[in-house]
Image 1 (cartoon, rainbow, N blue to C red):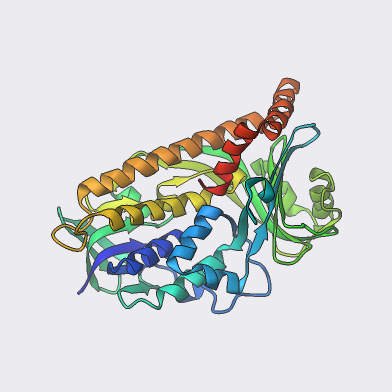
Image 2: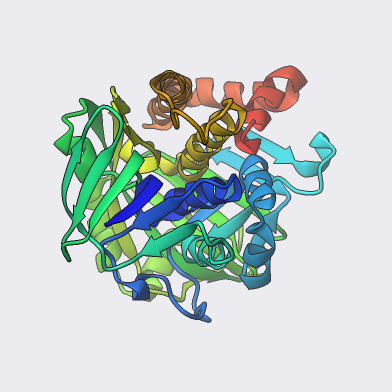
Amino acid sequence: MKQTQVCIVGAGCVGLTLALGLAKQGIDVVVIDAAPQQSVPEQISDEYSLRVSALSLASQALFEELGAWPAIMAMRAQVYTTMDVRDKDSFGKICFAAQEQDLSHLGHIVENDVIRKALLATLANYNNASVLFDSPYQQIHQSDSDVFLTLENGTPLIAKLLVACDGANSAIRQQYKMPLTFWDYDHHAIVATIKTQLPHNQVARQVFLPDGPLAFLPLPEANTHSIVWSTSPGRAKALLALPDDEFNKALMSEFDGQCGLCQVVSSRQAFPLKMRYARKWLDNRVILMGDAAHTIHPLAGLGMNLGLKDAAYLLELLADAPNNQLAEFAPNKLLRQYERGRKADAQTHIAMMQGLKELFEGQHPLKKLIRGVGLNLVDNLSPLKQLFADQALGK
């Protein structure tokens, strides 16, 4: 039998971040994941991974505090100093520059595989933390004070707190019948790595097209980008079916040639986009975190940062709790505070993403006028622009 204070189900970026923070606080933690150890590559490939995240300054600060940032930077990360957002075929444009905020940069584009590998390497320095791959659970039961898991290999595990970081289709959320609000964005996101004629110059670019946003995110090579192209399912299917040269032409045309000629240098993949919001995040000693609790449209690149904010908030509450190692670990009052605080922030971001998506969809002349005037107004009014900048920086 294995005993621990916290069991985390899911060894993704959010689950591993939480585990590292707990271990640093001296809290015993076990992470279990059904995937094999090989799901985290031993060596970072010369080819860029298709799944990347735009890490905000707040996320960078969290990784610095936990000691994982040097490992991330030692592998591969690309700083961006400017964000350029435009409405296609319109005068609407807004630009955020780091120097306007008296900052050296606005964030980093980092492959998810790099983040996970850095977190695992840092976590290996702690004797009170363990990560068990190839370890799906068979059963979960809980009492008023403990959670009992049985792994498929028969190993029993007892924890004081179970954190579900098991993704958007969380089996734990379903088992405990935590109600879910969801809708289909009616978008599929195409991801790929591309080379461009012009260098990115550390600029993260996004253009709003009639059927969804297209983002060019800078990668460590000067002429290399990761793209996230959100479009209708039908168009996504058609774009995936195009030969490379036709896809390259479509990409350059839709991006108004901002980066010159484009050349796709990886496979192209697409995945459906759905909004999910768990109306309940807590069931006695079981809590939800990250994609298990919420998923949003990637048009502002906030998804990963939102999950990391979940982890940071729980760590903050545990660090501030008196005697958290003694009579009662993570009392119900603390867990309810986590649920209330993070649900409110998630609701705000979900509403903001839905509003942006609806505003920037379609070619109606009045909508385009509102978008153009609105973007330029924000770009020229410092207080309003600062509000948008604060969101992008993770404040």
